[in-house]
Image (cartoon, rainbow, N blue to C red; front, side, top):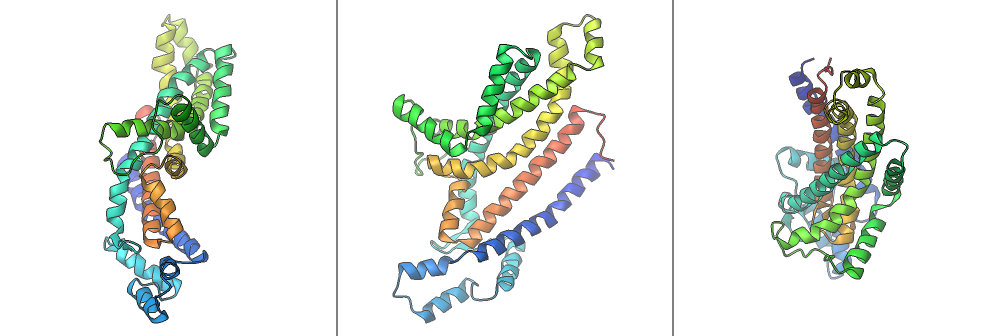
Length: 318
């Protein structure tokens, strides 16, 4: 199978995956008590039973679950993700408004993880068994073990309250490209990237250590090549295959972790909007964000598969 056919096959596989995700999410949502109309009635007791029935019919919430799903799916296939009932806004408009903030936070955390993890992993592998290697492994284990929400709270305590260096809660009024938003991005970006950096560093160290024991490294050294060239040109390239795999997998963790981090730092992204949608029982918004997350994760793994062939020509999709 050629790379082009492989990519086409993976793109076509998105359809059944997203269908399964939508069915499970829709079903789980309807297993929880309440819906947007129930909350509306609770906040406004003057709404009569007849008015409640009319509102339910207006938003297609009066039929059985399978009928509601079929209606929702039919609308999605035409590009209509519905409306947010509490404010009558288009779901697509809400998602597009919050999407840049989530992408910026995810990219910041992802880039931070790679920038910290790859040099640290190389250093730990080259100095295997020494003090620096032991210290880096301890830091990596700590980074993996610490929950995002606790780390975020500690960064707020130290960086914002004790040192008074960074602001804490991002204002929803400022646009993402405003210079002040960069300061609001640093603490949540560090929070979301710490666990990724720790995981990538451990894999980088292990992969580098294994590669450095192989025969081609011994042969390169025997030819008189400088150690720096052996490590950075030969060993590093082969070691990056495992890192690419993990980096793509961690995309899911970064997207999922952004939900907690955005709430802790009041970051105005899709994660915070997702929590608000759960609390308000906004099924249309909840489904749209879930599908977007699924597409993002699938495309990230597809990109990783493509990079395999670029990093190692021996890999073929046959």
